Image 1 (cartoon, rainbow, N blue to C red):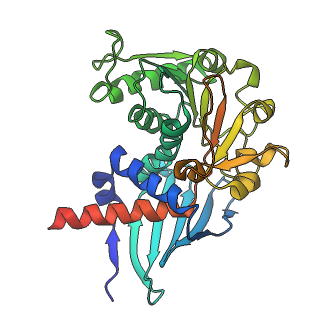
Image 2: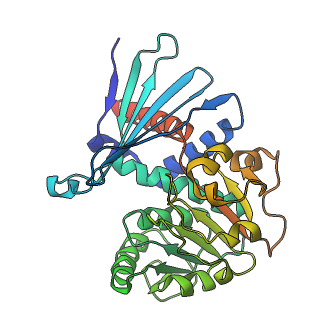
Length: 324
C-alpha cells in the first residue's frame, strides 16, 4: 500500500485562507455529528522548553493523529519553531494512508477557526479589528479575519511598543494586496493599520483576536465594549490564560470543544457553572449565537483533531489536482 506524503515545501505552496476556512467549517460541523475526539497529550521534552502535543480523532470512517511540536531555537537551523505533522489512517486497514507536513499551514489552520468564529458571532457592522500579539501568528489572524468582515482599521497591540510597531509595518505589507475598505490611508488596499497598547486596542475594537503565549490575563474585562467579539487562541495547554476571569461572567462563551476548553483551554479558568457552547452547534442551528448588538461574545480555540483531519484532506485533494 502506497503512503501519500505531502512534505512541508509542497503544503506551504498549496495552502491559502480559502482552503483553511472551508476545511475549518467542515470540521466544526463534524464536531457535533458522528465523530470522536480523544484527550490531548501535552508532553514537555527538555528543560529548554521543547514540547510536543498529540491530538487524535475520528469522523465516520476517517481517523487522524496530529503531532505538533515546539522547539525553540529551530530558527538557528533555518526551521520554524513550530512543527505540525498530520497522519491519516486508512479506514479499512488502520494502516497509514497519508502524511501531511504543515508547519506553515498550521498558521492558516489556526487562524481559520478564529475567523470562522468572527464570521459566525461578530456584528455585521464590525469595522475595527484589534490583533493582540506581535508574533507571526498575528499576521495569519488578521488575514483570515479580513475574509469574513469588511474592516476599515487594524490595531496591532502588544506589551512592547517596538514589537507592535514592527508587526504593524509587516501587516501593512501583508494586507496591501488583498485588503479593501473605504479609508484612503494606511495600506494600498485602503485599510488603516496602526500600533497601540493592548488596553487602547481592546477599548477601540469591534473584534479582538488574541495570539499570545500568555500565562496570565492580558485583557481586562473592563476594557471590552458592549457588542465586541473576541477570538482567543493562545490558551492551548495547562497554565495558559489570555482573558481576565470577569470576562467569562460578562460574555457569552463559545469554543471548539467544551470539554477540551474546560480542560486545557481558556475556559479552564471559568467557573464550572458558566455555560460554554460549541461553535459547531451554532453553525448547525442547534444553539443560538449572537442574539443582540450589545452582547459580548468570546470564542476559545484550543485546536482539535477533526480540524487537522479536514485540513489535511483538503491539502491532499489540492495536491492531487495540481498533479493531474
